[in-house]
Length: 107
Length: 122
Image (cartoon, rainbow over all chains, first blue to last red; front, side, top):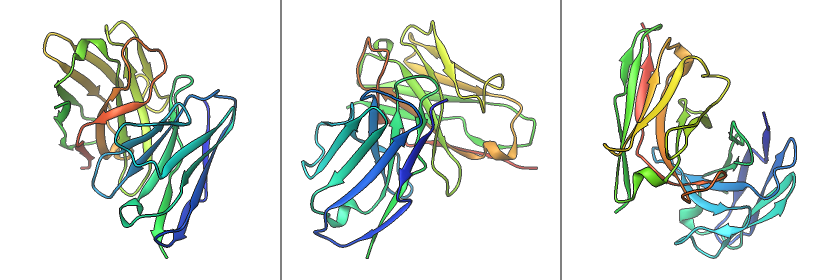
């Protein structure tokens, strides 16, 4: 199975900051990577698919990049609504797998 | 509106079984692969199982292979997850999710249900 490792596990930042979350795959997954945002008690929400494609309705402050084994999610200017937990997911092969999550907290 | 609505969760004793359902509406259910994902209390997301649009192919995580069975009834626009031999570590919120595109072998998940809670305890 492909292991997905996110860093950091927790990130403290302020409104207006630019933040980056990294996701590494244990083997190449080409660009078959998605990013999700989850708030407490809610279902995950798709932000980015195919490593860098922005899901419809998602603010352009979110962007994704990478291919192969290393990927990043960047939020260019944090808004209050962005404080949440973020997960990467590989869908190159079965079983699909998620990273352990990155909790983005208000500093 | 595209919608997924899970049901069937509850409190079950270790070793017990449940059948979870996911009712789909607002899209052509028979055209999309579907997935089950769970989240234990305070933990991250765990991909469990997926099924092709036709129901002809199924895929499982090692942690549930042999105990969980995914299926679908395209005439009823409903996805199922039969969960057997339940253990305390299966306690979680179970989500169903829709693939982003039809007729694709690789896909993210763009629509999620609200989840149904399974609690395994004596």
